[in-house]
Length: 105
Image: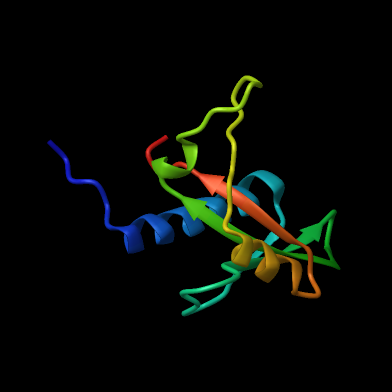
């Protein structure tokens, strides 16, 4: 039986997985926040042909635990963040996109 990754490894795999999707599928710029263990994981710049200065922040939540409560819509999940996290995500000058990422899929 294969061991599941540690919480730290799961988080890092989620950040890399989201980065790869942004770069490969959207062809946008993905900039990791190096060394950040709390808060915003990356910034993304929208690129339609070339970078145009439209930025948003990304907070990645990785692992199966984030997919424990399915919504009433197909392929949807309920995300219940803590109030202090929501306050934090509402404070930056950039809009924050929270991404749930299942590293086992």
